[in-house]
Length: 532
Image (cartoon, rainbow, N blue to C red; front, side, top):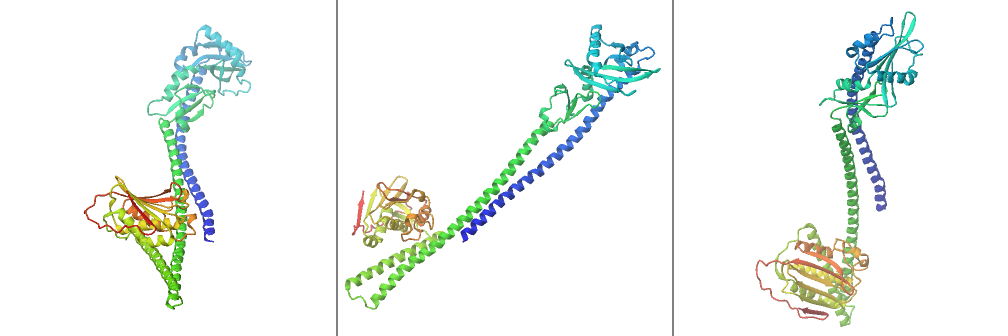
C-alpha cells in the first residue's frame, strides 16, 4: 500500500515539478526577451527619427533645386533655356537637363549640361522611355511630381510639373543626375563619420548604391524609402555600435537560454536526487525492518531450543545418558550461535555510531586466523565442514586490533559455512611487499555477478541467501573494519566453483617489537593446517 502511494506521489509530483520548472524558465526567457525588445525598440525609434531627418534633407535639396531651375525658365520664349544653363552650376548642380513640353507633350525646348552627343542620346531616351511614363494627363497644376526609374540599367530621376502661361499649358521637366547625388550630396548629408550612425542606400534590387554594408548590424538596422523623389531607393541607418550590440544580443540570448537550461537541469537533478534519496531511505527502512524481523527470529529460535531442552533436562524426562549429552551439546551450540549473533549486532551498532575503540598492536595475522578457526572448531565439527589453512610468504605481521580482525575472520568463516553448501573451506594468508591478504574460499554456488557490488552493504542479502540463517550485517562489519584499518575487501569467483571473499591490510612497521606467544595450532578433527 505504501509503495503504491509513493508511486502515485512520484507520478504526480515529478511531472508537476518538471512542468513548473519549464513554465518558470519559459516566462523568465519571455521577460528577458521583452526587456531586450524594449531596448531595441527605443534604439530603433531614435534611429528612425534620425533617418526621417536625413530623408527630408535629401527631399528638400532636390525639390529646392527643381524650384530654382523651373523659376529661371522664361515662358515668353519657351525655346530659350539659356538663363538656366548659365546659372545651373550654382543654383541646381544636380540637374543635368531641362525640357519644356507643350500641352500635347511635344518637346518645345531641351538643353543639357553635356556634349551634343550626350544631349542627343538623352533626347532619344526621353522620347522612347521616359516620356511615356510621365503622368501628364492626371498632373495637377503647379504640382511638382517625380519619376524615379531605371532604364537599360541606368537610374533616372525626373522632376516635372504643369504651368499655365497666357492660356496655354506647358510642362516643365528636369533631369537629375543620380550619380551626382550619390557622389556629392549623400556624403555631405549622411557623413558616416567615426562615432556617428552609419548610413547606406539600397536600390530596388537591394543593391548598395551608397555607404557600407550593414549586414553585421542585424536587427538594429532601420530603413525607409524616400517618399516622393528617389522612391525606388531605401535609406538605412544603424548605430555605430550595432555590430557590437548584435553580438552582445546573441551572446545575451545564448546566456539566457543556457542559464535557464542550467537552472532547469539543476531542478531536474535535484528532483531526481530527492527521489533517489527517498527511494533509498525507503529501501533502507524496508531492509531495517527485515533485519529486525530476521534478528528477532534468529534470537527466538535458539532461545526456544535452549528452553525446550533445558526444561527436559531439568524435569529429568531424559533418562538416557547419551541423549542428555546430545541435548547439552545442542544447548551449547545454540548458546554459541546466540552469543555470536548478539556480538555481531552490538559490534555493528558500535561501528555505525563510530564508537568502537581500536587497540592497535603488532600481531601475526596468521596466528589470528588460526585462533578464529579454533574458536569455530565446534561449529565446523557439528556441520561436518573441513577447514584448510595455508600461509604463503614471510611472516604476516601487521599493526591491527586483534579482536576486530578476529571478528572479521569469524564472519568470513561463518558466511562460508552458511553458503558453502557443506563442502570444505580454504583460508589462506599471504604476505606481500605492500600488504597482507587473507582469503576465505568455499565450494558453494558462488555469488552472482550482479550482487557482488552490494554484498558488503548493510542488511543486503542475495536472492540465493534468502533461505539461510543470517542478519545481513556480517560482510558490512568486515568491510567497515577493513577500511578503518586502511585496507580493502573484495569478492570473486573461485577457480572450480564457489566464492572467494577476502580483505587486505597494508603493511606497517610495528611501533613496538613484541614476542607474541604462539597459540596452539595443532590440527583438530576436521581442520587441516598447512604452512608454506
